[in-house]
Image 1 (cartoon, rainbow, N blue to C red):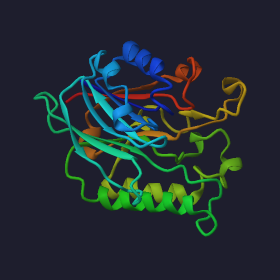
Image 2: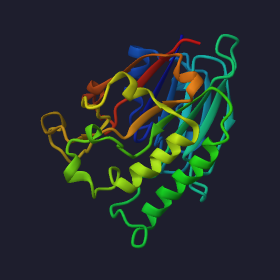
Image 3: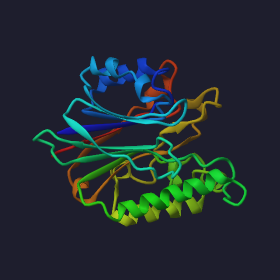
Image 4: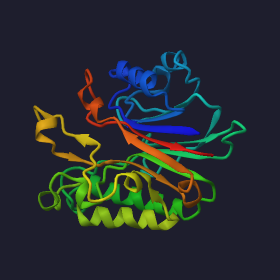
Length: 265
């Protein structure tokens, strides 16, 4: 078995204590972090190595964005794609190299949020988000390995992925145009949405709650922005899938929670 976790941590240095807590309590084999918000030399590599995560692939950037994948299993960096086409650190891919899991590729991605207005003619960031997804789609059409792509997609595609479908139809992250664009990416390689294989639509499934809500739990205006999607052959080996919603209540929490999937390889 190999277990993989994904978490938009929203500053790994600020929230290192809860990263350590997660690793101690859940002990996933591989942890993919987004929005680490630091350069590679600033990443708390030793602290995570001390917990057994000695294999690390870090794609950092000063103050913004950034992704990192750490593992207890032998792995090597596999790829870095500039799907943003401007040098931002939003992707790193790794390949597991130990004999038991050799060949599995894990792509860790942080898709742009897209700004506030869902109109690329007045909002450059929204256009960049759509273009990012189109570049990912062209890449997905050529994927030929057992691949898991995880991270903060910044899109909640289903009605049950948001607290109120009708109210959010014109809000970036749930607009029909974003959902259609993400669907094209899904179709390009026949990805399986692992989360929704286990937590079936229309069951509530959120991974993000805004910091603006004084009581996120009572308010419960969540969205499912974080995803774990597997290529067809790998999807058949997916077992347990779970999330830690309680992490949204930990000290100095991220506005996202971690997701997990276990695979039998």
